[in-house]
Image 1 (cartoon, rainbow, N blue to C red):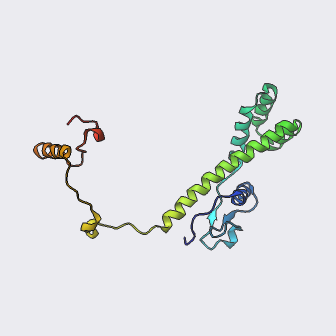
Image 2 (image 1 turned 30 degrees about the vertical axis):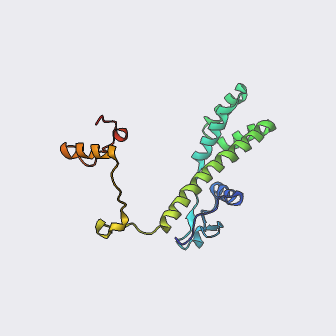
Length: 184
């Protein structure tokens, strides 16, 4: 992709959360500007919104329910979550009976969905940054003397080098005791 990383700000977070909650249209994000587009407009460069389905919503409700100190309400919500049908509607209806708990739910849901959005955006930004890196050299033939720095060995290093030369220690093992725990 030609675009750099997306700036994670309030507007982008709101778009991602909206895209996650939208169950009607599969949305994609244009990495150039963060705008949401329907799948039909995807030219292959757009980023699919993170998956967010009923299972994720159920886990969110379950997590919130576990935080409630009111054991009567908590048990009622647990019963609703285990009822099997109409769970989402019944859960919301039960919360509406307690406006203060409904506000806590909205805050909890917003916070948790924003965490998921930030995590998703961070992973995409990492991928976008990796796409923009120059390719790694394929082999070591291209290494030149200027790729290395040489210096004179210090007296304590000379003793270690002499020990290495006289022993059968593999060169891949560090010669410095503090590096590998050995007692050379």
